Length: 331
Image (cartoon, rainbow, N blue to C red; front, side, top):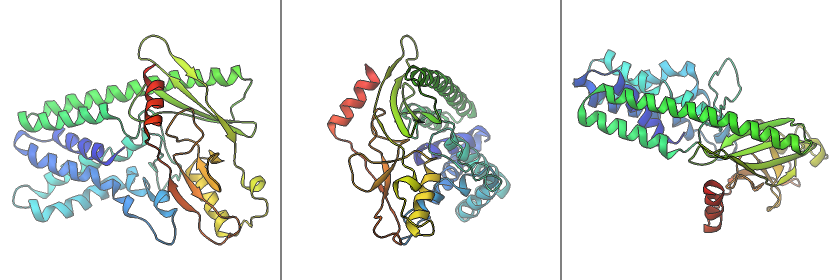
């Protein structure tokens, strides 16, 4: 999830295992440790534009990294806190703070190398958005109230509520997936590959993406907490296939390797952006759940096969897009 939520979760987790007199220091150590896993965002290269997306949520989010990450946090914090706390207790708070970083990110749809180095699979459970204000607000309130009241029970109640919220996300995912399957069946489609994921900041509006017959279909599914659910049919676009769309491109070329790297990152949901020239987009993400305009993609030049592909974001926060999103969410 976003870096603020990771820090808040780390702080609340550390509070939950602290003694009353340790709560302030525990909160600080946990918050800092919760941020540490996202330090992988600093891994980038001016000569390789795809390196940053390959290593974001990589080894620093692995379960195996947790005890080492806690040790790194301890080393960084110890010079400032050595007069106030023992190294053993500080390590406990750092360990608590970083313990759930990878798991929380795996609950989103981005993909996390949770079991690295034993598996290179990107784990994405799709039960919560990358940014969810309800989840973040609960953690913020729990952290602040825990500091004010100096009671670990507040942190534990906040964590319980967050666990229930993730459980609600799982239930909503099952309901949205069922509607997605029914939609595909009504079209006479057999889904070859499918993902259903929450849209930004909520558990009500979901984006359904599946591949059938050489095309990628995107639809919106609104799953109410109570009452009626509905499907809003969206757009479709031709599924990008390297050997068919760029038949003359050498497999040994830098561009071909970059496209295959981006295909692994995007779990195969690739298509040419219908609104931009020479842009291959990740169809899992768009500003609108019914749209085939990707949120990000790579810019290629088939005439220069030895040049790296360029990774770009295509955010559109215009009032038209915001209003269209709100209509889908609230209607």
